[in-house]
Amino acid sequence: MPRKIKFSFAQAGIILPALLLALESEVAAVPQTVQSAKSTTGILAREQEFEAQEWPQKPEKRMVKMWVEEPPAGINKNTGLMLVLHNWGGVYNSSEYIQWCKTFAVRFNVIAVSVNYLQSGPEWRKEALPYDHGFLQAMDVIGALYTIRTQLQAQAITFNENRIYSMGVSGGGNVTQMAMKLAPYTFACGVDICGMPGLIDAIAFGTGEGTDLNAGYSRDPQSPAFLSKDMQEIRDFGHPEHCKILHAANPQLKIVIVHGVADTSCPISAKILQYRNMLAAGISVDAHFLTEFDIDGVAVKGTGHSVGNREQVVIKYADVYLKEDGAFAKRLNVPNDFARKGKIEYPTSNGRYIVDYSGYPKISFQNK
Image (cartoon, rainbow, N blue to C red):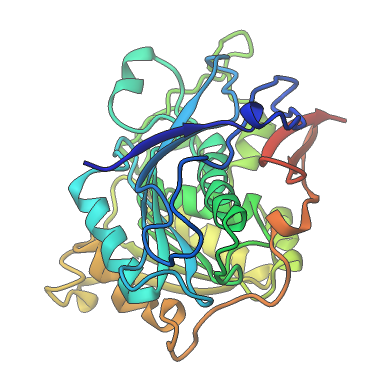
């Protein structure tokens, strides 16, 4: 059975700044029960959990689980990190996502991490709370990277911090987008497979206009589920000004989009608009809007939301960017957000969102 470990920087006596819309929470840290740094295999506990940022909808201690898969040949100086992110309502340790982690760990020489980010699984639907839609969910997966990085550094394990990637499907595609946005100096490549095109009105309020999704938000300012303009703007990966900020921070970023034209969950028209705004800002995007012509019966089996074999979709469309010897292998040559320990700001209509990397990554909102 895989080992489970819990850990907290609070146990180490380290004080970290608190940021989440004026709320405080303890944060994740390095597990103390790990193998010797002299070995390059079996360094990390396969199943872990860490303390994440507090959620205002349920202000209480919140733990996030993750599955960690090392390359079976061991961690070397070129081993990168890769997020493998499940769909809306999925779970981190399903057989499918564990297998993907194993495949990508070998194929790309990465430590592959599947994260049970906020509102994973079906249980959250029973609470009648709005779906986070890539906000704290993105901070959770960024927190997973921070935790893995901290563990490796604590053991003096050499790896390649310039090879950090993410892939995700559906809701995980959206979280991949948002992780790249909220950690703009960190990712070399992200693969978005049929991801949601931001928190558009049709999804936010479940209007049924081109989508069968309903995130459960309200237009009523008195409702606990009220969606402010600022909340909607920060969740839009295609926000023109935000795209410019991302590109200015990370002009080397490569984004791969794979999206079926007959998708009835994540509207293709909204996704193409998002794509257009990304291109206008200068972001390098390799987009594949799948038609019947693209069906190959192996990776692509249809043009709807499921697309086909998502593991093979990554291999087909992103091998050249993710493999160490890929024709267009992507890696950054600047310090990432964790190394920079700075702050990222995204202005919105009535204020600004600030992501603080001085310790465990946290996000907060400040009014004008």
